[in-house]
Image (tube, rainbow, N blue to C red; front, side, top):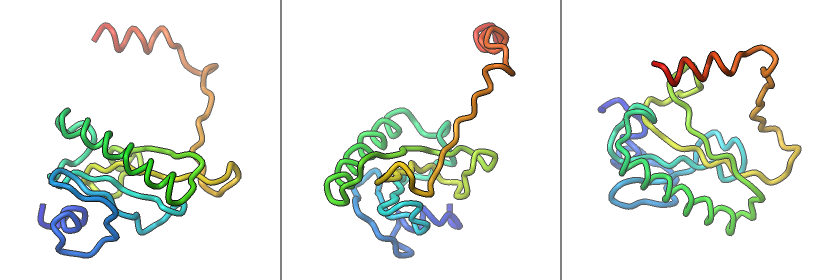
Length: 135
């Protein structure tokens, strides 16, 4: 995709702080640096989002993400990580090229939060289960 910023980084058409690269993927520091060392792992081949990526590439990206996280843990003394991907704008995807965020965590009271809200009193698990299983 000619106008995809991540394709341009993968093709070395624009600079990026690349910390890992091979024939399939690369990892580079996210400009936003949500936390120190926030890294994106992307396939060099363009896929719009999670559901578009073939299983072999996806498995490879997960393995690479684990290796990159180990490096960040060792080099930056990260105490934990959030490993996430967003799919489509409604979920917060801002660049339409599949990517995995590796967000190092250093303390429990930093200013980055993923909030899981308990809606257990508002939903019918049987209805959801049946919808999934009977479709």
